[in-house]
Length: 384
Image (cartoon, rainbow, N blue to C red):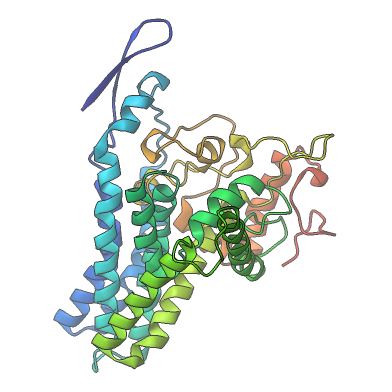
């Protein structure tokens, strides 16, 4: 499909999204746990339980390195037409049942009598990672104002019990991003494990406070059916109840582990997206507006296609209402060494992460550690 528009100087601009059909990978990628679960049950080989973990955290980083980066930007003149194309929005909704199918299949396979304990854990870890990536869909839909989009966000976020995310992300993280006040912005010298202990409870507390304030402005109590957190929580409870009725109460520990892994998947994303970056504080005490340079960016094509362009995070924070297909690359942005899956693997080993990323942060700050968001007392030698 070719998009045609007129530029500000009156010239006709034509643009073809060369990734248009490749975006279907975003819909297919959450089917990996489904494939692993079906193959394990059909073949009777528990090694298939490892398939999702191997695919997401070994194969995808290798594919990112092999296929490299995509620096294509849609011309500004066609952005409005590109954003209005319903095809891209349809893909977001189409991915939701795929996430649920992978989750249900993995839970079913994990609960079979022939499944060894390590395969149960591997299946849950793999599907938890996939469901955590589903928060990307909730992220995209949660930025949209329509009721359908908002309920789509609730539906996918309920899968991991993280329904408070749009509230915290839109009204909290986007306001305080790249500042010490933001629990979802990692500090230089802070390991991802230390960050998780700050980010997960901090984000939940901020979401509750923000929703309480919103309801109070309407004259409503926190415990009300119009509470967005409680609405998503109700869906999560229905999923849990249905799963227990289907597979028995013994599935509950696996369900809780699945949710925890999904949360950690988001935590890893938040960790790599803003690590060490700091917005300048102005004389009036406020922080400077968020610019593309306040987020780490990556254009690795395979993982970007799997994550609905989440990795073009720099343009997203500078322009939160831009839909994923219109997000742009900029020159001179701070760049991650790999796509998100590869960066997660690196972050999971703090000494390696510090060795690779701290020099990048200091280079971004012109060598001045005071211009970074860092652990108090941190020197150029990171602490964990």
